[in-house]
Length: 443
Image (cartoon, rainbow, N blue to C red; front, side, top):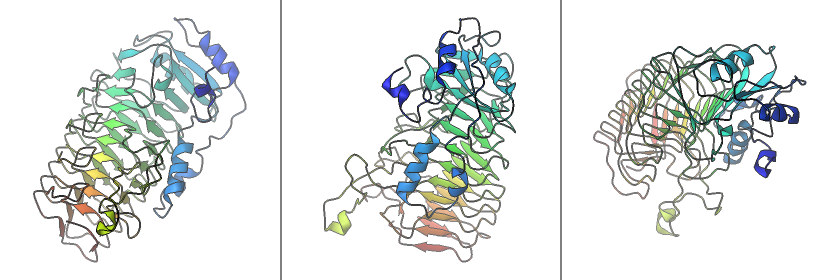
């Protein structure tokens, strides 16, 4: 086993030695399963609830993101050894075998093949704690494109159903589903290294609905993480879908980190979703979109694009936990239907990944409507700009009538990351709500 496999938090490290040996001996026609071991709680347990508190420090957020990457101890290991839709060694057979494990036991599904699995029917829903680990495919490189894809071929997408809490989908492409590409109906699920709506070459292959749909019974999920806190990392690419990119439909305490939503993997051109980039609706509560880390861990320098208003040399850091939400047909971020206490920080909305050119969303950068209240776009303290909202085809931020006590604080709106003009088509901030606070923004 390589040093990388021995590293804490690596998928291989999470699988007991017996399981790894059994999986390695799997024949091309079958799926191997290790003997059961004592169930253990994964290291991410309990973290999801804490994510609903935006006051966490940048250091704590990065530590939580590092912990969330670990697949956790595995009781079963199953190997996918064929790209066939069904039969021994298929992903379909592996999910069925994983679902047959007793409740409370964890399974890792690993891959000895690369390429595209084209479905002739929907895959079984995942109903146990299962890690579908596309990063185990031969030749996979961290931070690069997935090597295994599921082409749903007009059938329903991948469903993490009730019972699949703390499951993980790592390093897989999911495309061409009849509805949402990935559906979450259980809590503390991690998606990372995935293409949702793109094929393995990074071309549009959209799902007919949303890229990712997160239901109300799926709290505390981790959609993307940045293990090293490295600026410019793309955790997931969720683009080209006919519906919205990500929908948090009544979900609470979830975290979206370092995703590219509506762009190509490089973040240089649009592969827009047909709706909005991120939607929070049906009373989605306490979700963190981005994060408050503004320091480059390689240099220790904090973001300061104005050079402390000309007193020191400027420092330009792309926030390592922020999402790039650009090129979508609708709004960049839509907060509606009574959603409350959500926090947006470190995001680039309507620009390229570098933050210097427009790649606008078709609507507002951020639209808050439908009695949404207590949401924070930005932050009262820390390095500015907190969010960069520029280049969009309507207003930068709109707070409609009926919204209450939302805050828009210390963002760049209508400027690029250098503080140069990069206008939204409409107003910088349009505020028609009651008790909303708009303060400290540069426009």
